[in-house]
Length: 191
Image (cartoon, rainbow, N blue to C red; front, side, top):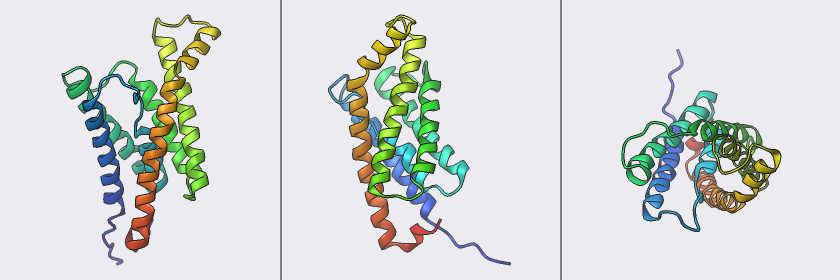
């Protein structure tokens, strides 16, 4: 009978994700609405989990769990000042997040600078289209016409620019650090 050895890879990946999720909460506590609204690590969290978790269920469960925990903390300490498990319209964000994880699983099978940059653009596009579809359909700011949806998309461009910049920064930190750690600690490279 073959004995399994402990592989710290899952723990290290999870620590990375929890750290940026915690940073997401802490940075949002410092500011209310600002020029950095939507400068967030959630795109990077989804891509990182999708790329590095070797089992499909981990690739979806752990990124979704870290997003959910950070959302609960933001609801309690920043936005609503009470515990809220799910906010209105969360299914749009979580649906987009699952598509981002899928992007990480398939675009980042081979981690390279080109693939990381491409995946950052793809997840920003996913976030833009899916979440703004939710804003447009559930809200009353924009008419329920094609021109209303277009106006919603155009209004979101500054937020999506910040989303892209945040995703790129956190991707550089997370992927760069993990790839460097894999060279120093070969057990992290074991899939």
